[in-house]
Image (cartoon, rainbow, N blue to C red):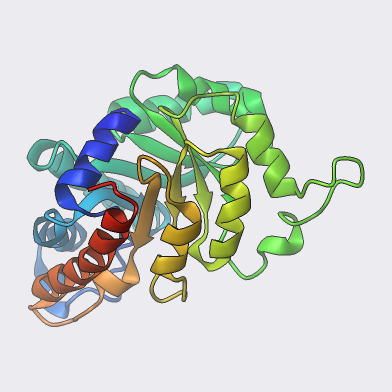
Length: 277
């Protein structure tokens, strides 16, 4: 999937919503726990309920790895279900991997070939040779951590180089933007740093951004669009807990659909204001 194909989905659905599949066994409806694979059953219901409004799904690997082999099996089934039943929806492995090149090649094969994700989140801390193996796969994406939404982001990301006057996150973007293209590289920029999207766009005006932090973390969707939207929208705004756990009864899927629809209705006028639909 390239950026044009992703933009077509955004225009068709009038949405740039990414639904995070951070599926916690301790929070899903209790009645599902009697199922053979409660995580997959929950995910399947969420996907079917929200697919009309979502252009991407992001699976946070920690919520699957915590359950060992059964969690990995749930993840495989979930991604296969999306790729089979909703093949035009973009899929992201939120794995935050980052290791030497030989190890990265194994990670790339695992997530791109075995699991068939479109994209994976990576930490760029170790440099270009750790990212390059992921960029050899056709129509696959890397999503590099740049400016995150967690509270201690400024421990390192805002450190300023005395010579260049650039903060570390800006240096990461400036160096890495040449490793790939607008068709295989995105960046994570948190919604809680929405005003800083303006500075990010000065460096990478044409790349897509994965934007977590809208909803329970307090990020403003309007501000994200104001400072971050580009000529192809260029945004995948993620919502996880606000959609997944809108209701803990057997009506959870209906409640998730309503939340996704609510976000899509907020996104539609933002796209129209930018003359993208």
